[in-house]
Image (cartoon, rainbow, N blue to C red; front, side, top):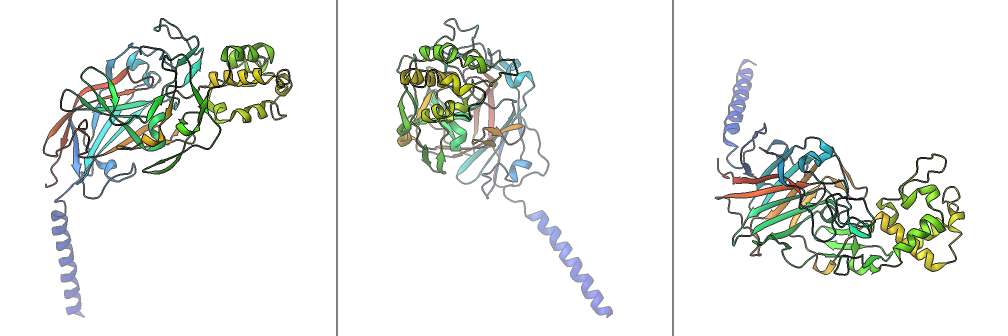
Length: 425
């Protein structure tokens, strides 16, 4: 019995000693610190197992850079007819509803890909990027005003711009409306003359007649499906039009406004131009949101004329329901105050060069937590001459911008350094 105890003790000590030796030997490649450290440069650590999910363990332990959210450009407005939706943009004081927005960046790489995780605070979730609105909110910085059709809705957007060759920048651009549904970022190039263009065939085309006077197309009512590398995506017609599911925009919006406010008396329950009323006994709710554009034209007409239309709505609609032209104009006006998509998607030329995962639930357009999270994933090297090729032995300069209004007025930092950590420690 005594010999057995001695043997058991020696065996136990052997395993403890061996375990300690293994603990010292294991972290030869891709070591990740248990406690994240704030660094001056963005450090991309090496890992041999792809960390390609927001929930991947690496992102909980990786070192990070804290981005100082200074104004990069403010009070610069688009030419043409773009206006702000969330108010006149005055830089970081209006971002995140005036609250402090904290941006952190983390990075990593494996044998074939680079990964960059961006996280920031913003209270708003607006997926209506570049929607057409009819007589939208005024903007004191826009001399031509907001009468008629204007592009006047925007969403949270982030871009990373890496210094490339030939005085160009390789730009990765993400926003809710154009990126989140497809788990993709736009692959773009900023030329020396300041023009930002798609790298490759344009996946998105402006839904206008070339003069930005009015939208050309609306949804045709058929189910919209887009095949991508990530599978089949169902497109929400309130935000997107697929090229094969677009039809000519119908109706005269000006006459539709008369039908809404006067002929059919919709204003009695919904307010002038659908902006709501304060009288609780007749308040039919504001109509100036995207929800009504999830309906087909036929669906809207059927609902407005049905008993499900609360109060006396169906009776008011009865004044015009037999006048097909007036009904067509009314639906055009409702489209206008809710927002017609400002672009349509060219399905044949749509491709995903840069994967971008986010914590956005597209069906309900919401964040899964209090912060935005976007994980960019791209090949270290691509076949495009406009893309930067990452060599882990080098350091790269890049800039970052974030905006909750448009992609010309940004807050962020102009120059950051990306440094790859050696795979051998």
